[in-house]
Each structure stands twice: as C-alpha cells, then as structure tokens.
Amino acid sequence: MALVITQAGLNKAIDASLQGISFKITHVGVGATGYVPDIEQDSLKNEITRLAISGGKKINSNQIHLTALFDGESEIIGREIGFYLEDGTLFAVDSDPDIIIMYKSGSNGSRALEAFDLILDSVPADSITVDVTGDLTLNFDKDFEEIKQFTIDELSKYSPTLKIQHAPWDAKRTYKTGEVCTIEAYGEVIAMQMYAGPNITCINKNPADLTNRHEQWADPTKPFWWIPYTGTEVGTPFWWLSETPPESAVMEINANLPSAVYWRLARCYPDLVKVVGSTEIINTGEIRGHFLRVLDQGRGFDANRHINSYQRDLLRQHGHAINNGTSVAFSDENSTSPYAVGSGSTRGDDYIRATSVTNAESGSETRPHNTARAMAITI
Image (cartoon, rainbow, N blue to C red):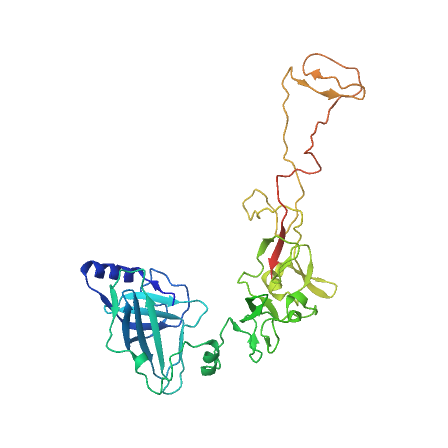
C-alpha cells in the first residue's frame, strides 16, 4: 500500500512524540473517487462509508496491521481509503486514478474483510498505534474462507457490469470505444485502447493481432479496432526522431487521410476536413523543411495569418551607410580597382556596380543554425 501521510497526520504524530504519547487509528473510510493523494488533504474526496476498525496489532515501532469488516447490502467500489485518528483527523490516504483498491458485492448478506499493513517510516516511532483488542484475520468463520486482495477477474465475477480498465484483454468481453485493456508483447505489458468509433463495440478482436490495428490496417473506409494507449491528447503535434511515426501517430507530411479511418483527428480539427473527389479527407498539413511561427491571433506582428498558412522567406528592408572617404571595392566590366567614395575620382565607363563578395557559408536562403527533426501528430 502506497500511503500518503497527510500534513495534519504528520503534525499529530510529531506532537505525540514530543509529549511521549501515541494517537490511535480508530476508523477506516472508503470513497468512490480515484486520484493521486495530496499531503494537504483533510478528508476523502468522495467518502461513501466510514467504520471502526475491527482489530489490529502492532508489528513493530513503525508498522501497524489492522482489519476492517465491511457488511450491508450496498455494493462498495473503493478507489480511495482514509485512515482516521481517534479525534477524527485524517492521518493517511491511499488512492489511485486507475486502480480499484477494495470491493464488496451488493448481494444480500455479503461481507468483505479487508486487512491493511501500514508502514509508517516517515513518522516518529511509536507515535501512532492501533487498538489490539482483536484481529478478525485470526478469528474469521466460514463466511470468510480467506482474506484476499480482489483481482480483476474476481471483481468481474461479483459485478458483471463492472468494466475494469487496463485489465488483460478478454476475448469474451464487449469493449466500447475508448476502453483500455493490456496485452503482453515485445517483452512488456502494453496498454491498448479500443478505437473503432463513436457508439461502436467489439468482441473477440485481438489487439495483439496487427491487422486489427493502425500498423497493418487495410480498409480505408472504416476505423481500425485498436491503437496503443498513450494518454496523449488527440491532435497533439510532437517532434519525432525517425521518419517512421509510432503506431499512435501519423507524420505531418501533407498527407490526405480518409476521415472515416482517422475520425478522432477529423473531429479534433474539423476545419482541416475537405472532400477530394468522392472521399472526405483530413490533411495533415505540410511542415517539412519549414520553421514554425506562433500564430499572431490579433497581436499585430504577423497579421492576417491562419492555421497552416505558408509564408515565404523575406529580408527586412534596411540600408547600408558609406561614409565620405571610405574605400570600397567597385568593379565594372573592365576593372576591379577600388574607389574612395567622395574622392572626386571619376571613370568614363557606362556603368559601375558593387562587387558581390560572399564566403563559404552563403547560399540560396537565410537561416539560423538548426537541427532537422520530423514532426508527427497523435491520432
């Protein structure tokens, strides 16, 4: 359990240590909202039940074991757990945005016995304790055949309507667009998101099969089934150190993509959608070989521009002053001898022109030092 000790809880522990006493954890609260806990919390975000602990014991000066018995007819899907001191102070919180921490079925007579081990290395030794009058983990009857941390499969048995995200792919489960499962590939666990489109479901479409995914999808008239889940906002452009994009993106190379397949990109950027022939497409835009400039949006430095508009290269108007008596190199078709400006010297030639003087760094464009990178867009 990855506990976060609250600031209020830490203050209580320090006060207890200074006074040579200890505070007791007496209650456990369970809430329905998952998140990353904050040290400044003084309550759970969505508490649905709180009950006195059933028993516990002190393992050592900084480790406490306690149990809590959840009963009643209400189903409990716990995504946040809080541990309260005897005066009502929220001492510690455990929560996660994606994980169900505890579960109790809503069936008649159902009960769930939860056991918790709290490692308290970040508070003074012996400052926090627990009632040791009893420990149900040592005295449960036939209704509690064993104490278990509910796995994803066990949760599904108790609540068939519960849709656990980031669970291993199940061939028998019906997935809705946006739901996330996991597969094992390339020696790691990979999260995959169902992609196929609004109000579409799929069953028995294996995300490990590349023909069901963007990488090897062959049908230009409808979306593929699965895409790697990255958590990145759809339509986000990003630098990429390869000319081949990741499976969750396309390159920004002036490509016309069928909107039927890349529906999320089309929904994100409807102004970039157009009809070519009889096919509705979305164009990625052309960024190759160009520098980027932030859109003016009314500031006035670069007015009358719009997203993806092209602007040719340009040098700002300027002048070069030459003081009287300064020697500069002039040439005509007959001579390259220097003239001193304002010296009174004249030539009878038909024209005089400035000699073009350049060095090895000159070329056909003006540019700063730069490094070439490819740009991709999340789909």
